[in-house]
Length: 288
Length: 275
Image (cartoon, rainbow over all chains, first blue to last red; front, side):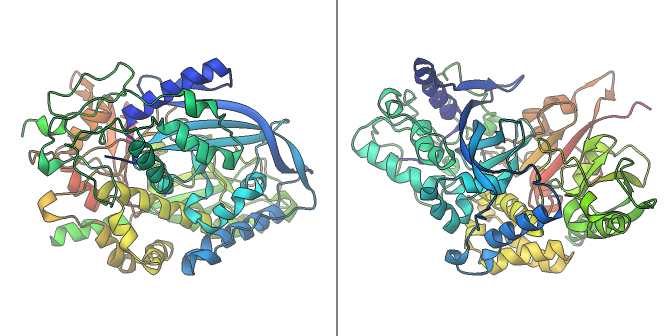
């Protein structure tokens, strides 16, 4: 079963394996745990380049109108053909290439059952970049993709664990690019670490490169055999509209072997590795 | 079922009387009078405060005006949270009208999202609806709707049109009869005593053996602190739309009737006032 979705436990396992390689490269990733819970996220800061406004005067009514124009172009396309929706990257005469401090977080989204990339950016003087500057900093190679696919877009969101403003690459299309990769890996009996694969696609869009050694050196988490039959009526399905092949046939290890972890597990499941996030209850076993 | 429909109306038409006062350090040409407004619980601050902005701009020079933002007793108010949630979370046990301070300078970049236009509010609103449907229906219902249907949801909210909104929203509240409810319930539990802004997890409304989960079951599972008590006194209030629903209320019913227009159940857990 080539599931393009990721349950939280597998996310954590993939992250830990990712981190092991990261430590050997000393490339700055760390795991941040949420106080009092098993939840956490990967974090890294890095210096990169971006396009920022030269003058400090990025405030003021004129700037509001500026941003308003950008947004009305990027979001009003819902009325029309998707292709008409163009995000206008304002070419500022007084913007230039400069050094930008980036902070990247990789979180897990239980709603979409995928990882999500959050980031923030500031100048070396500590001024936060605005959304326009972030758009301008996206490499021209990727801009077209962002322009024509509004749900791949970068927006400002609240960080769900920290409550602060971050920029986010919207996760709802993750399935589209992960599915073929995972399927191919399965067919060719290759190991795939979900985080490595996913990050190598989304990271470069926002200035985050993934060295090739990650792809060869980072394994996928051990396949926890859940070969015991699942109760049919509650057959755990990742939130996907495409039909899943039956899970009872012998499968080579896939990168996301677990159905969403909140589904009831039969008692004969293998014990969970220690780094797993707490399982929601076996809801089916509550007394009626 | 007539009663249930009334609940939908009561939720939609909930209002909070609010007094907007200009922050004392803002530069004005003459004294700014406070501005009073009834705020819809289910809407968003930046969507309904054009009049507030116009009122204060009358006494200010354009160069002293940047993006408007609000605070209550020193806490900056997140426009992307529904107004009713902000009130329940920060001001439930204070006297009405709700006193909000208006700012036009020193936007708190780290804490607040920018809101340069209504398109941003629309995008945020639609994003929440899509996320809720991903949880409820694996995105099938929202993806089957046309763009004009999505637009109708937004326009209904923006223009305070209950019937227009619900004509479309009812589709998002349906589920296959044999399932007994949604796949997962879209909810967020907001905490005041924590760095973490909210808790959101996967939680089913109906268990596999047909047991109907209640609000109490949800809290026990994802935030047991909320229902802990010593010596028979409750430490916390669990508030939705300004009321404390009974913990025995079925979660599926709450999701269908007390969700916000973004299809999420926004639940506040606040300390019980000591007097």
